[in-house]
Length: 75
Image 1: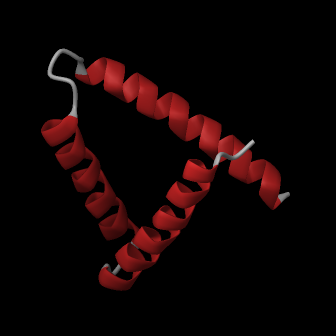
Image 2: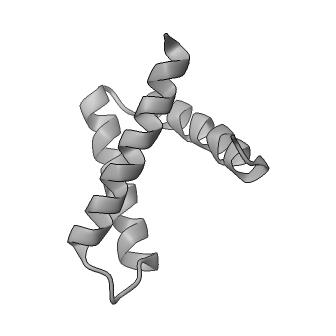
C-alpha cells in the first residue's frame, strides 16, 4: 500500500527523471548524474557511524523491492 508520502516521493522522482533525461545526452550520463546525487546525499546527510557496505546493502534491497513492484505493474 502506498502512503501519501510515498505517493509524493513517486511524483517527485518522476519530475527529477524528466529533468535528468532533458539535461543529459545518454542513459549513461543520466546514471552518472543520479550516482553523483546519491553520493552527495550520502556524504552530506548520511549517518557518520554507518558503513558504505551497510548503505549499499540497504540501497540494493530497496532498489530490488521497487524494481519488482514496478515490474509487476508493467505486466
